[in-house]
Amino acid sequence: MAERDLTPHFAPFLGMAGIAFAMIFGCIGAAYGTSKSGIGIAGVGTFRGDLIMKSLIPVVMSGIIAVYSLVVAVLIAGNMKPPPDQQYSLFNGCMHLGCGLSVGLTGLAAGYAIGVVGDSGVRAYMQQSRIFVGMVLILIFGEVLGLYGLIVALIMNTRAQG
Image: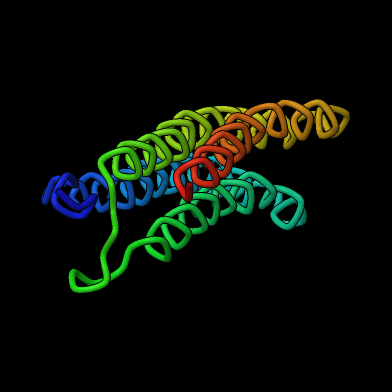
């Protein structure tokens, strides 16, 4: 039997599920972080409009989470070919599913963390400007969760090539 006959026909479904999980969970995390931080920024803007530009940092950081998911989804999609030329193994499908789950779920967690810290942080920054550096540091620690998921997904994606 040829190697082509031993690869299951459902293997590309797992790769596509990895793409879907990366985008769905990553974008939910980014949307939550943006909306929760935006609520805090709107509250700050009603009292101190001069602080709005510095308060946009959590929203930008939430958007980066969605970019991480998009990068992994594009990399996975680039490894998949249409059925006539397809040599897509079950191993590659499982690895790509793991890639998507890795970046998606860490993006969800990071977006949640950024949203909670962003909302509380910008409200505290409105009352005491010295809290700004601490707020940014905590936001970075939340953002790095998504970055860890991206790194793991990229490593897994390179393993799926072989």
